Amino acid sequence: METRIKRAMQKDAESFIMLMEEHRQSMLKVAYGFFSNEDDVADVMQQTVLNAYEHIGELKKPAYFKTWLIRILINNCSQLYNSQKRMLTGTEIAEEKYYDSYPEENDFFSLLSMLHKDDRPIFQLYYAEGYTAREISKILDINENTVRSRIHRGKEQLRRQIQRKEQA
Image 1 (cartoon, helix red, strand yellow):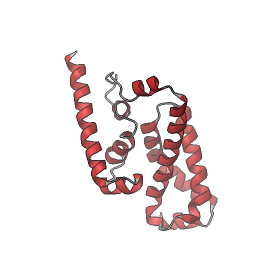
Image 2: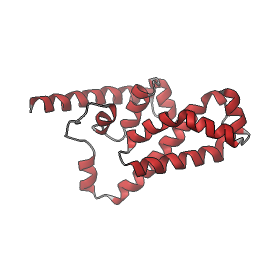
Image 3: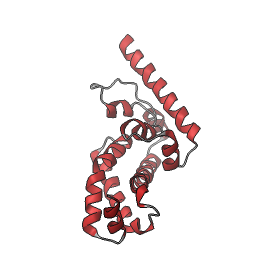
């Protein structure tokens, strides 16, 4: 794979397309961690592929390709989310922060939707992609202890919401 990354860094379109296909599922999982709307996911995926192609020559080490790509995706997700948030009123934002409903199907994306937007990428990277807290802190450019505390806080929030639903 490193050879393919090096060829893509030299603007070999076929190698780049193959890399995007190899990482497509990981990218989709992260994007769906931010958005439930397919159009928003498609927008950030398209923008990420474009940004990655334009800047692949700036990648310092081929071994960090996936981390670099996911970072671009998260930046694009954050930009789109923030631009949408500016269009909402303060009440809508407060209501959007947490979901009170228990997911119909106990799948990962439904559980993610119950978390605060800022915690979703951390859970996605930690549980679905298998990154460590240290790696996530580098990808998201936040303190490693912050990552750990958000994971702990998010697990507690999910546990409370599930218990609340089971008691109802």
